[in-house]
Image (cartoon, rainbow, N blue to C red):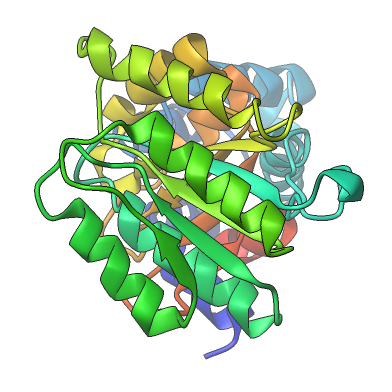
Amino acid sequence: MSSVSKYKKVIGFWGGIRNLLSKKRSLDSQLIENIEEILISADVGIETTEFLIDNIVDKFPNSKNSHIGELSDFFKKEIISILEKNQCSNGLESYNKSSKPFVSLVVGVNGSGKTTTIGKIAYKYKVQRKKILLGAADTFRSGAIEQLGIWANRVGCRMIKHQMGGDSAAVAFDAVQSAVSKSEDIVLIDTAGRMSNQSHLMEELKKIKRTIQKVISDAPHEVLLVLDGSIGQNALVQAGEFFNDIGVTALAITKLDGTSKGGMLFSISHKYNIPIKYIGVGEKIDDLLLFDSQKYVESLFEN
């Protein structure tokens, strides 16, 4: 299945809006109210919904004289503008090549698909003939090291690990140092799932960042937050907590395969200006896409 076809798996709630637009010949106040209801029910969030609706009303003050096609085109441009403002490159081109490897610190709560996402990222770059190293710095959760090890074997890359319950910062240090010595391209560091009320774990994340910088001064080059796309506005709360505590630089949103409402993707991008780097659209190893806002929006509005 092509990447374009896979984007069609994330259309979610937009079917309702397309149905509305297909049944109307002109824009009226009832249509705007219906669109607003769909956006809120799809977890787009109050703030982003109001932003979109206000822009529509400003653009079409005399709604009864406006053609429905104009609304569709305008709505599409508004959505693209929200996402393109925070368009994320794959990151590998933008970092200082002299500080190789590219170090990605991967964070998120348990159950978000964090470790699986790391495995899929590793596979994506392994296919591109990059040399990948995984750092098993989740020494807190039972089975986390073993799970990451399964992915390392599946992808065919090295992994650095310590014992369960060990110092996660020490694992990260050893992983980055080892990658430098062996001239590897990418280090993906798994971390323990946490929420902001687990202050000891959040402080551990900060320690990991400081420890990595003892090896490479400008690392980590990315703090990637993995969010479960099916939990709606709770994901917005999680994004805020991690953003404030450790400075998230990119997002990976999982489980956007048609089972989720999907609207939270827009609200997070709009509120925090955090680039969306990856979206997960299925269980297969290649069902992790580099996010392309243009392709994504085209898939939303395609009949």
